Length: 222
Image (cartoon, rainbow, N blue to C red; front, side, top):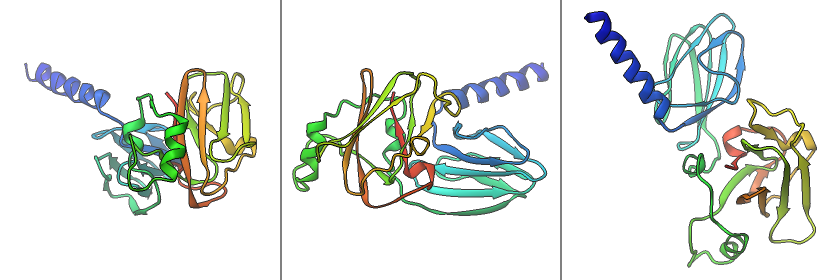
């Protein structure tokens, strides 16, 4: 009876984790790490174990909390930050858009015109504000394959097309535009589209080039 009860509790816990909304993304993994892989989304209650030489970098999307955890130990994912046992823990805030968590698993209905209009109307914005990126090179999350189109909205003439049909995507869904040597203009308004999916965003005026925290460059296209 006790074994059955324990198994039931375990099953309920796993079901709860499976249904939970992602709160962080795994930005880097080194050495022996079990329970998560590079560019996994992780959810509250998820347990990650670090073995010899283990290191994991986590970016919390809502709090913009950036963690570097290394050494042998255990990590439990929380809603705003991790609980760490034994392992070394370093963390700080980085630039990111906290609305990113609301966009994962949802299709944005925002039009390009709304985004451009919001750039010039700080007092009377209509609808949700566009996503803000803090790196010049986005990382796109998409479950589909086909032609990815990146286009500038506020200035004509800047447009990129990337064929993801045969591209190597991390975890089968993440593509870093750095692979195509694409760097967007700080302060610019852009859209990324594939088939019927569309996301509009602006690049922060102080956005930096090159590799930066994933949570500051992530665009979810679903």
